[in-house]
Length: 233
Image (cartoon, rainbow, N blue to C red; front, side, top):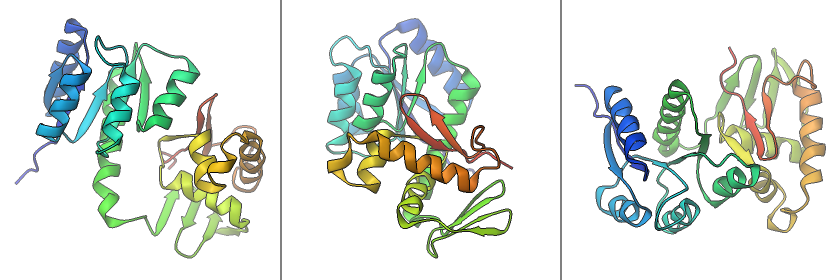
């Protein structure tokens, strides 16, 4: 028997766009609950328990950033922000507040569908714990054994380098902000020390990338953070 698709919730105040996106998602086999305000969305999230939220930031009652903060007090519901706000500080703030991904309008429908599938896949894997082995292209990371290989050649990493790489592995395919990485790897007291991140990311690229200036695996999201590319084959 085919598994039922998870319920997607859309919080979007523009009626034509809300209808267009709802129709697009339903044509892909998803069930969609579409609402037009932040408070209505928060209420629906508690009562309907959707599998994923697509959120606009510019809402008539609550700003979308506030919706994320309120949701994160009681829910780990996956959140994709879909907004016309394209400034780095808006993107970074949304991700630091707890959003899982961010796309700016206008957007590519195929890209949105790909992000939805990737996020649902990641959530479905969470009960299994961290992957024992992660591989993308010629890069292989054995998390339990703390070993890293490139093209079958073992690469020595320092403890901090491995911690930084592990944080990216656990969010493979998704951007992790500077603040999140600094807090995970160095601790809360280091969140303003972004130069640590630049130095260690540079060291990792020199060890893991064939061309550190044109990385295949450790990608920069300008002004926001870094992402481990899981699509290399």
